[in-house]
Length: 177
Image 1 (spheres, rainbow, N blue to C red):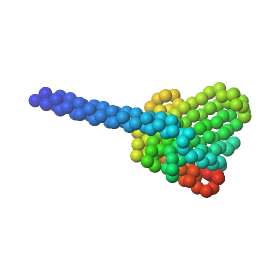
Image 2 (image 1 turned 90 degrees about the vertical axis):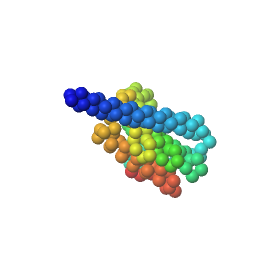
Image 3 (image 1 turned 30 degrees about the horizontal axis):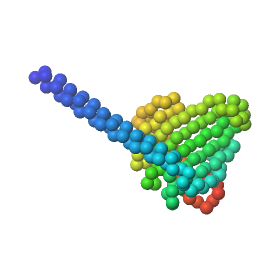
Image 4 (image 1 turned 120 degrees about the vertical axis):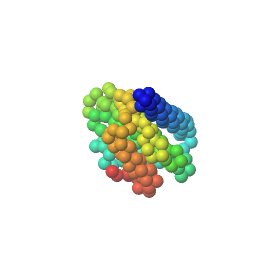
């Protein structure tokens, strides 16, 4: 009789581990697919129509957005934000009208309004069907999807993406926060 609880516990453990492994494999497959799409978009970027917009209210020293359009579809957005002690860039990538990837790069200057970069941080965000599936922070670590920072970043990036896409399609030369 004592064997039944042990066997049942082992069975539950095996099923749980198997489900986790399957989820990890599916996530890894999605991330690899996103990486292929990212590479394909960048390879073809010279063929896309470019639309430039000014960014107001996103940083103290202003900024610019460049939208890459494949026909009417936005496939890539590059937002550059300028500050006194550095600059930040965000690249947003799209497939079938959906955000699939965001690459953030923050560069810090050695002194105010300099061009000499002394430190750079990069973060990567992978999306599948408007859900953040992987977040790799500036230290190269994956954040836990159940963390508040993970959920908060998902919301922030989707909102900014929607604002930038609408602004890129707008007749207005400036996108305001």
